[in-house]
Length: 49
Image: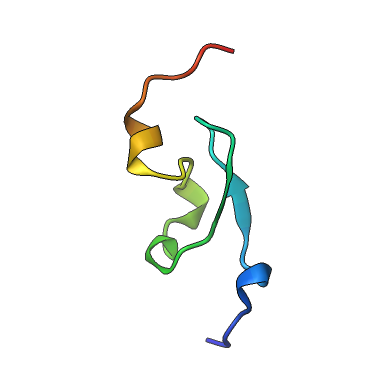
């Protein structure tokens, strides 16, 4: 795999807090399923809109 610059990595927004987060090596195989930026956001109940 060719090295990529950090600024070239894909970015998503967390469905809980709305903050952007970047692709991580540990998410390489499940990137399409990643919705939350952290375990803390994943554990929190959904925020009312």
